[in-house]
Amino acid sequence: MKKKLIVLGVLFATFGITKMNAQINLGDKAMGAIQKGVTSFTLSNADAAALSKEAVAKLDAEHEVAGPTDPYTLRLNRVFGKHTAGEGYTLNYKVYKLKEVNAFATADGSVRVYSGLMDIMDDNELLAVIGHEIGHVANNDSRDAMRAAYQKEAVIDGVSSQSTKVAAVTDSQLGKIGSALIDSKHSRKQESEADLFAYNFMKKNGYNVNAEESAFRILAKMSEGSQSSFIDQMMSSHPDSTQRADDAKKRAEKDGLYKAYVQQKIVNTAPAPVKKTTTKKTTAKKK
Image (cartoon, rainbow, N blue to C red; front, top):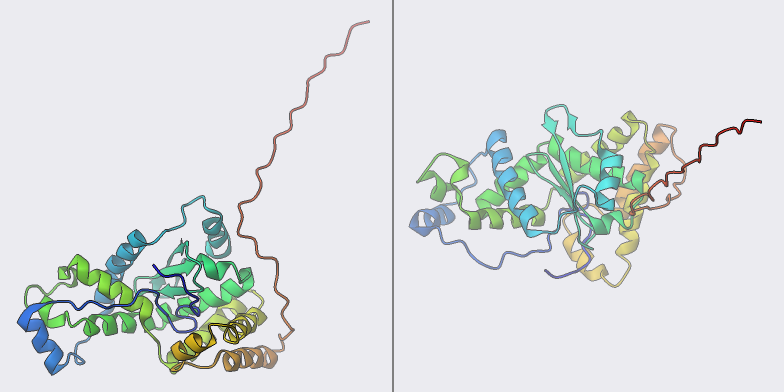
């Protein structure tokens, strides 16, 4: 898998590192679906969640996932361990050991964070980023992304001709759908609403809301570097990072909470083990 700098997943437009070059051969039935279009199909929340769960399981098997005692996992659990459920959704988190700056969320509540993101953002900035990801799940944007991926691969008629269950998709098709999820883009409206969700999430839970602005400033700074043309191309259909940072600042100012954010120390190492000290027992000598 190529290592390239990727602007943050669904927070800054879910960008993928795996491109779909192969076409799925689903036979005449599916080709008919492609020709006539499948935009009228509506994927239910339950179907989207079930299909997402399978697709993410395949993605997990194809990526290096940080283990339960890995420092990245320990940090993610420390930061987000208490935020696993909300109104209408349940979340699960894992870290992909990849240098890309990325994160994404799917309709079943799976949130995947790349170690490259954790290397450049502190705990509060991560809270803003993943709070945004939660927003996409809570707002059903992740369901819509799954429906788009499902339609894009034209499996609807191909599957329904054999079974009414989404589980009928093949392993190969799941891989294509999973890659499409990572590579999908949300609309400007969806991104703005997820930005607001992240801000309210931080405010409600007593976190520093100014970290949201800081996270966008980091992305804006990255776009000035050697990867700027690539980033600009990928971000063309989404709000500008600088503008989104300005919007986050305005929200904090309106609430009387604004203060220029100073990034905290980033620690992605396991805490040093505590050494046990032993004391020698002494017995008093009889005189």
